[in-house]
Picture: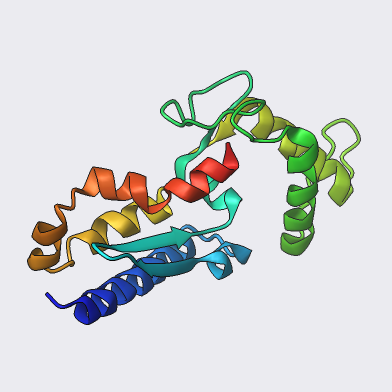
Length: 180
């Protein structure tokens, strides 16, 4: 396979992975700025071609899930945990959740008084529960990569000796290093 064809195939692959990831996010009823953060670059080296795929930091947390501070039942296999691995505590989480709560117009009720809480109080409560219990993995990007990997031409897979596990690990390796 010629280098120009390989570049074209890899570019189409990245675009279809991102399109599938956006579809997966939409199916999960997740609308946020994450889908706008997808980027891919193809680097040519003398003996190889590298496809680098990037997304915003919170995309990794959402894809893999996060173990909670007190319980890891939601994401037992995740490498991310609150208080470790670069994941910030509930204070930073609260700010992001507050924006999300306001955009979705979500307000909890105070069970003692029956009144609606402010957006700030709702965000603080939600952040507390997420911080302690964790986030369940959505696998929106992992599923997209696995599905689209099957569509790569056999010539390309054989020529570069691609394996899905190694490919998934390598595709986001630089981004994951910057998180830790």
